[in-house]
Amino acid sequence: MTHFTRKIATAIALAALTTLSMAADPIKIGVDGPFTGGSSSMGVSMRDGVRLAAEEINKAGGVLGRQIQLVERDDEAKNERGVQIAQEFINKEKVVAVVGYINTGVALASQRFFQDAKVPVLNNVATGSVITHQFDKDPENYVFRNAAHDSIQAPMIVEEAISRRGYKKVAILADSTNYGQLGREDLEKALKAKGITPVAVEKFNIKDVDMTAQLLKAKEAGAEAVLTYGIGPELAQIANGMTKLGWKVPMIGSWTLAMANFIDNAGPGGEGARMPQTFIQEPTTPKRKAFIDAFLAKFKPKNNRMDSPVSAAQGYDSIYLLAAAIKQANSTDGPKIKAALEDLKTPVEGVVTTYTKPFSATDHDAITANIPVFGEVKAGRVAFANADDQKGAGKVRVKQ
Image 1: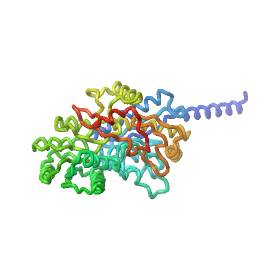
Image 2 (image 1 turned 90 degrees about the horizontal axis):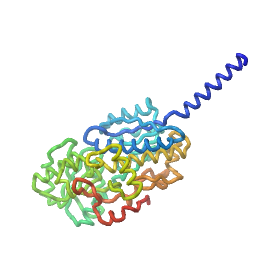
Image 3 (image 1 turned 120 degrees about the vertical axis):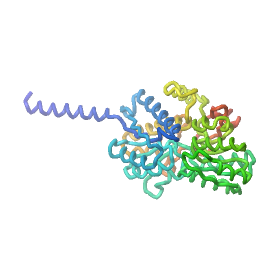
Image 4 (image 1 turned 180 degrees about the vertical axis):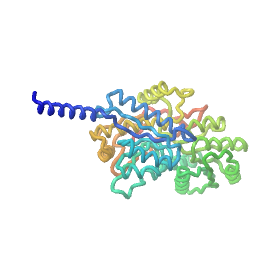
């Protein structure tokens, strides 16, 4: 072999090695959520669901012959931290897509960076109705979601309070965040459609520990039920405040009344609270049983109860949806993943639902109003509120 031939052979071998190494590069997916602080029971449950899905996919050979690598960051439920993480994901980590977002405000503050970079975002928990419509005026939209948005939940809450249970006087207590105030607007809109004006509309801040003033206004106005939009710790203060006042009326609110830090901090005062749920921790289908068993075995939560079953299930499903899109696109290129998400050819069997054509170019929300059911806090866990829902839970509700 001549020196020249040897050089060519070496160059070819190096090129082959480079190609192999590129093919084996992991697929980096950003995971953003609050893993500390008041929102952490949602954030950690979501993250654990994501981890479980990624581990299963990797054990089965990964996607396009490559392993999924999760790049996790704690946004502490702070908008400014979410913005920093978004820039880090894009510029430093070079993620191909992002899952997560628990808090509506953090999602709205961060998404612009991914939109500009053409990196798909799959919101798996945040429910503010505007989240998937933030860039409706742009030619392309890179924001997707597989959670029940507030335009679904608010009418459900109002239907439960006014139509099913016959209350005519209701108060709204909502936190001062984007989540709480956008949810309050959705509740008022849904009440107006029924010809009802709330007898009291009260606001509270994150970390408030005394709701006496707000509750007294609701009580004095004759409220027969309290409709809530907030997160676990403050919702527990509402329940505890009612107990302190000796005034007990039903709490009916958004899905966050299912959070462990509401149930545990409210104790007996939280019993009977009702909320829309896309997933209740019961093995009602083989897929759900397998998910629950795997989750409990891997993460060993206290009392075998997920802190936030909805967050865990939607987190898990979001990774399978992304993996299906990457496989179909045969690429980790952002625009190609987005196009595949908008036209998924093969159904994805998830925990919440079986996703058949979950998204389109004009519809980036996978969950429709027929999918959630009402949960109720019973003996320190969330169970089905209605016997009919419990009876029909083995039949998977699919997008309309």
